Image (cartoon, rainbow, N blue to C red):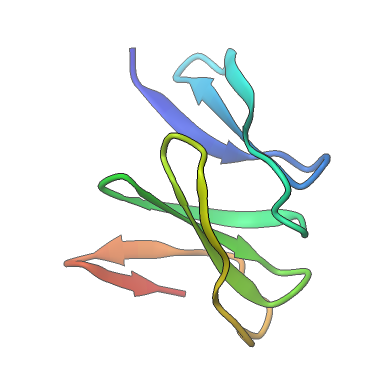
Length: 89
């Protein structure tokens, strides 16, 4: 069954849900410091847009936070995409 990473609006965390919407792991990534607005996945890297503090965080798809402030001073980041190894904000 395919799964997806969807941002939740409570407790600044990301949850892992199944393709049917069933929560697989409600606390996949905790403690992001702001409400996650957008997510992009590249291999085992998970990039999270935090509009509240203008940062892009980097995590693993297993939920480990690599760097909460991977990219800083981004004006109101909300949508992310990865193509050809390049992260677009």
